[in-house]
Length: 393
Image: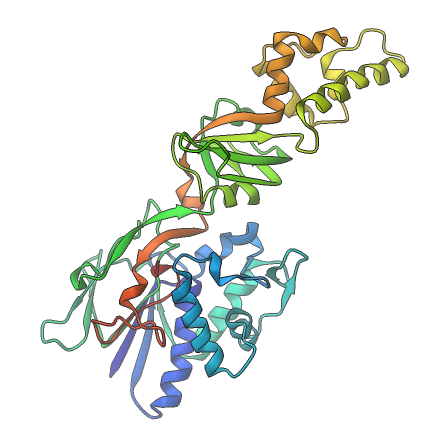
C-alpha cells in the first residue's frame, strides 16, 4: 500500500487531503493508496475556528497577488491554475463551492460563510475529508521528516516516539504553531531554505498600564505605528479597537501587527475626524451646551458625556491626573493637564512589546518558494515532497 502523509490539519492540509483523494483515485483507479492527515492538536480545523472573530473570513473578492510576499511566484502559480481551468478562476471560492460552502461577500470584499459561522467551513472540510476516505490522526506532533533508510519514501518522526512511513509527504503547517506546539523546520534534513515562523495578524502586546484598565472596551479609533527609523508612521488605519489586559486587538490592530516590532510606538487617535485645535474648540462648545441644559458648574466629565464612552474618559482623565468633577471653562483647556489630555486623545502612545502569538491568525515565514515547483508545489530537489499553504514563505 502506498501512503501519502499530510502534515497539518488546518485549511491547507484539509484542502490538500480533499484534493489528493480525488486526484489520486481518478488517476490510479484500483490502486491501494491511503491518505492520512496528521494534526498536532486534538481536532482538525482549530485555527479556522479562530479566524474572522469566529466567522471565518476565508477569502476576499479583491485579492491582489502583489500583496503577497514573493508575488512573482504566486502569480505564476495562479496563472498555471487559471490556464488549467480555462478562463476566469477563483481557486479558493471554486474549491469551497465544490465541497458545499455557500459564501457571502461584504462591501469591503471579505468573504464569509453564509452562516457567519467558522464552524461551517470546518464542517464542509471534515465532510469532504470523510467522503474521500482520508484518515485523520489528531494529537500527533511531527517533529521531523527524514528520508527512509532504504531510500524508499520518508519517515515522520513524532514527539511521542512514533515513526510513520510515507511514500509522499505534503507539509501544510504554519498557523498551528503555538507555545504548546511551536512550528519549526521539520524539513531540516533536506537543506531547503527556511525562514523561521513568526506570528502576524494578531493582537499587539503593549505596555498595559493603560489597557488593562479597559479590558473588553471597544472603541472606534485610528491606530498608527511609529518607529525610530522613520519620520512618518509606517502604518495607519481606522477601525474598531478592542482593549485587552495585555494590549490591544481588533481588525485594524491585526493589520498593524504586520509592521509592529518590539520597541515601536503604537498611537491611538480616539477622534480621527478632528485635529487637536478642532477638538479643543468642540469641547469648549460643550461647556455652553451643558450650561444651556441647566448646569451651573460644568465638570470635565460632563463635557465628555454623550461624546466618548465613560470608561475610556475616566481612564484618560486619571492618566492626566484630572478629577472627573474638575470645573472647567475655556481657559482651563490651556492648562498643562488639559494639554496632556488632548495629546492622549489624539495620540495615546503605547510601547509595543510584541504579538500575542497564540491568538495570531497566520504566521510569517516558511520554506523558500524558489525550492518548489510552480505546477504542483513539489520540492525540486526531493521527489515526493511537497509544501502548501503557510508552510511556504
